[in-house]
Image: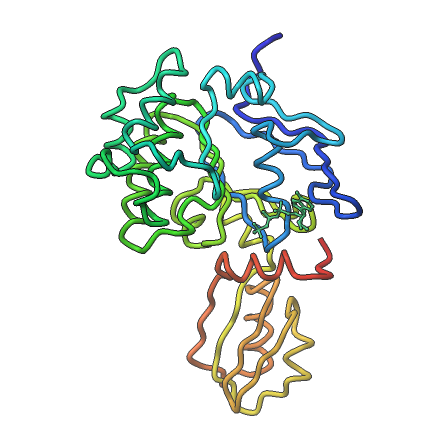
Length: 300
Ligand SMILES: Nc1ncnc2c1ncn2[C@@H]1O[C@H](COP(=O)(O)OP(=O)(O)OP(=O)(O)O)[C@@H](O)[C@H]1O
């Protein structure tokens, strides 16, 4: 088999559970070195996509490859490391023993101490699985995911059980990993994590990819900008007819116009209402884009 130049390639991937289309024709190619956030509301198909990529579930149709390998081959080779939400830990073993055991399964693992350090669990090495808090378990799973020294890390809501400080430490460890040119795909509900950490955002809804691009591109897809101004004598009906305007919110003389073309809207607004003042134009945040692109009945 020729080595695929992509770190991840999902083609025509489908998985149904009864009548539920958990993954409904996903196409996704991730280049080596990309850090990709997988976003979407509950039930969008993120975990199923991750499971298909790891070979934990078989697709009804389509293929998933990792550097040209099947999921099973990639897992066996240590090319892919995974951190899953409910990933089992051995309750009777210590964190150090668990990492040691996983290391022994791989040809060229990281030194165990190094994996523990990168995951911030050096102090927990002697602690048993039963004695770990939710956030500590997540960090132990991170050490286990790192120890094969994988080229691709796949993480399903890695920081879900972590407090703010632990989360910051976790992303510091991740930066250490990605700075060496490794590839990461992580599913998350925290938009600020996607905004801060990902090069690319893939938005899923109903088992499909509904947006894919940089944070800035996904924001732009959601339909532009908001213009806020104080406009004496404004008529909401007239404002709604200005070019590019998709929504008008008025409170007294204060107005917020959502616009697909803020330049055209602003020119027309000032022509119509020369007394308009305190004008502010702002981009839609990732949160706004997320809500608009994943809303039920959204056009995309
Ligand atoms: N093993 C299963 N059996 C039956 N239905 C399933 C199974 N796994 C997932 N589903 C269904 O498939 C759909 C997609 O679920 P999935 O867990 O992939 O979504 P998700 O985007 O990860 O959601 P969340 O953000 O809540 O974790 C949902 O409707 C879910 O109920």
